[in-house]
Image (cartoon, rainbow, N blue to C red):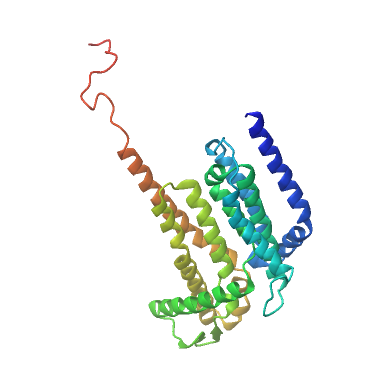
Length: 311
């Protein structure tokens, strides 16, 4: 690495260290908060995964550094806007919750990291490291309003899928909105039953899997796009299982482990279809690559470069 290139890298690392020191208080608060909130418990792992993905593509990263200040203006504006909101420089209709305030700090931190990347390493390097860098955005907690909207949508979709599964299995019920009256109990598909956290984790997992194992954009899109219906089907199946247990075993099963702590079990079950789809997409991709490999000199009818001893 040339001296000028090494200097740019040193300046970048120094800026990242200084920025982290400046943001250390909200960053520590974010890690403590996310560790105690199921919806955001993945945030602690995001920087680790991002660094790992960056190390995986180390050899493909651009080696010529430059400065791209114009490209840095977009993340700079985003970071300034986030800080303006949290510092109350931008008026809001209602005060920020702890979640939304930490989201603003996290957004500002990640945006300023991107600014440093454009200023010290340039557009070429940022393009070659786009996925690991953008993956850091998952450090930002989802705003409360967005989480509520996602929970409501997943709640309604899960109730509809559960209704279809009840019909397919012949489980007797009478539906009224999100309530299902069963022979032994009446259950409600509440927001807490939306499964939005596991679906969000499944979505992030699919992005990483698509980046690591697939090359074509349309195959990656298929894998990620099917995560939402897969999550809804998983949640509908969970409602079906709990309802069936309440009917066949007893209404006390609504308070059982499978209801209150069974989320990881059903999440693990949903990983099966995800990895199966990933395997099928990768298999098709490898077959296509094999079909496009150039034929050997013998199959093209050319004379072999070296004759065998038998000839």
